[in-house]
Length: 227
Length: 219
Image: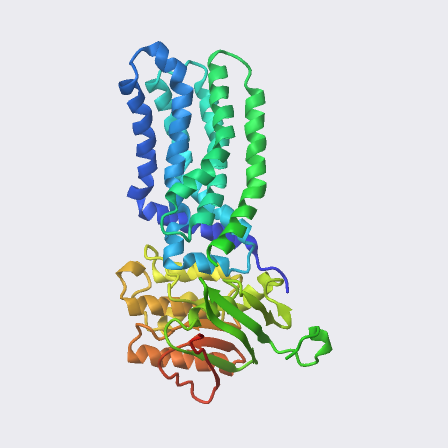
């Protein structure tokens, strides 16, 4: 038997998820609003001193992005699990890792990409050093897909549980830490005019590693989670 | 029972379950369950609530692992030939697998893409067969439970699956719907298809061969 054509299935699933996201826009906007709210509460809670804000800006923006990403993760497989479409995806003759990659890509496009677009605005709000904005966007472009990919493994493992939220954070957060460290440091370094190529290359290699291994692990976790 | 390699046995059954055991929590639901199914026949699984009918069906289509035993398709363990087996199997479970925010047509288009290739008829025709003309573009969450069930069953027609695994296919259907679905199953069997289904109601499949399997509560 020849393998069924994989690309149409990938594209169809990607389009389906984007369409579903479009039809429930309000839910999708939630993590985004959350991202803006956390970052904008810091000046109110700490001090409005531009110097202080400048020091904490890279970290604050990245922590907000990380929490927003964590908040949106649960949507990745939850509704598909509840209405039984996840079973149908598992029963597809196509490679499950590739289908998972389509779902993660769709999820990143609706939750990760808007963070990228909004981040320069938050940079201005938090008085981010000039010259660091470009690096901030770049680190988010490299980093948020890693968050989605790693998060997918955790969601797949906890999707069968009634209240997997806390467990999900415990599983996923330790794996997020390297991304947070390298990304926030890169933005910090860029602010002082230091070279950031090393940081960015490290993030890029983490992304490559995540794209290679995470869909495969997620697929295995889904098969276990739905047993 | 065939224990040796399938090559040693000239008549390998197309679909075969061998010594299946199901444990849920610390309860043994069934054990040493074996059967074979040849083309053109249906297997009706019967038993009281909680006897493990749904668990058995999920094992047969490869969604869950049996505690013991194997399920074979063309003589090979389905876990080893997942892609090939999934190409030939279609499952309609308790959860319809129908997206509420998508229309019936969109749902079937996704099912067809996931299923790997075209089935016998187009998505629009499949909906017409199931009596859903005029609802093609209505979001599925606006449909009644019975109509959503029909959308799920229409999926069977747009993928080329040889084996249908149906968990209570008649649930929520009206009398006419039950007739339509029974006719579809009978036609599928007449085309050398196979079906495994659970139902509390008698299934009238015309001249088709229907085997029965009873799951008794285990103590």
